[in-house]
Length: 190
Image (cartoon, rainbow, N blue to C red; front, side, top):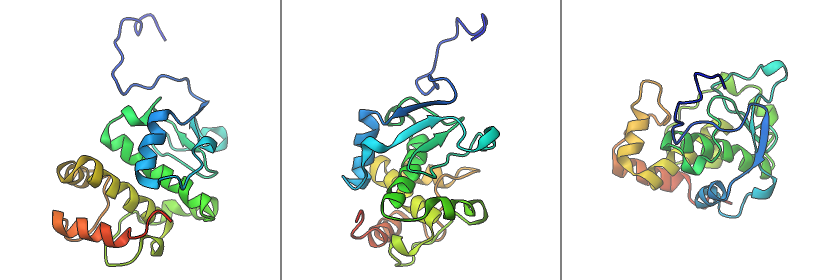
């Protein structure tokens, strides 16, 4: 911190820990994740890193990674995602989906190596979430989380941004998407 920074007030969502730090999930983050994954994740094993997973800080600063059951954030790191914006909570649940996938036996590192080549966009066409590729699964889970937690207006806002967080293609009317997510996520989490 420079002398010029000393008098500035921090916003609620400001980062607090230094780069290259690691921590356990907060009580709030565990409670948030349980609303989606129940007890299907061993929350005590999950770590949140403020820094790059890749050597030489090669991880894009605006990209989160979850290759090993631990989550690596750079610019989006927060001390407690349960106290963050709905957009950051969406990202947190997306990354927790990769933790869940890994705990279910998915080769997250192998699939993640090519995730920059695949589309995060999806349609709700009657398939189960398990029938989608890895990144689309995480998007469906996180997108539904926003709809169920914050409501349709917030979901629609995140879907219609210039760089949308929500990546659903097709009819996005409320009744249609609620039914689509319900069908895709039937039996989830398993």
